[in-house]
Image 1 (cartoon, one colour):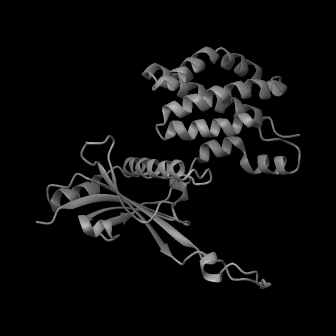
Image 2 (image 1 turned 90 degrees about the vertical axis):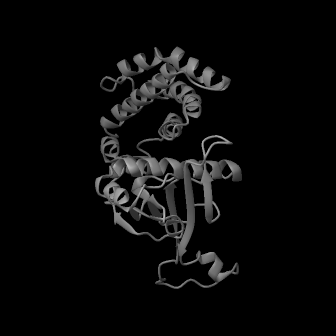
Image 3 (image 1 turned 30 degrees about the vertical axis):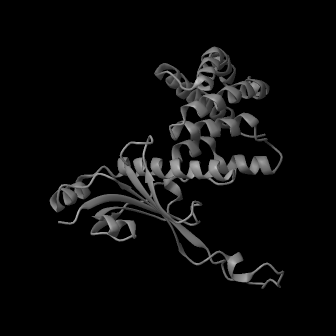
Length: 283
């Protein structure tokens, strides 16, 4: 009887980065694989490969550039007992949980690719980046080749709508481009800390947060009279020691659970402080 495996598949409007192929994923060397990740590139080749390197005239109404799409398929290594179990799983599976887990595996690979290639512009993906999301099952070779026995397309999520709404992104963008507001170093550092935390990279998150917090306390001082921002900054200043302790633990190799919780808490509170600054508007 053929062995059936479940999968989550995502497509984005750019090549994912790593060379196309199958990658065995395990947590530690010597352990049994827990996932197989299949990276593929679909669709039209990139424009540069079509046109060469010489300068040419530009049409006044050009057609859209031909682009490739990237496909990532995450396949857990544990097979179903039989077809009935596979069908029940597809019917009852928690869609959000399956997608979140698959994105963690895919982004682990993309992070490793960024580090291995020393390419700071290689990036991970969010659910909101997807052109399509699929959940299904099939035989091993079948799903590795992008086919399946049965599958469903999952509705695409709108991304972090709640957080974006609070930050009023369009108004903020116009204010920055129009010279009525500035982007702060602490914001960039905090975004990196958030991305690391969400990806399970607690050590990196702690180290990023230490610098982000110090930058925020210095940069946000000019707005401390806005609403309750002064109180928020005073409370965050009290967390310096806890954040420094977590960062020092990260340098030594790892964080204790309480330290990891402290990092997550301060990241959330610093995000709230930045939202409070933006909520007052941009003069």
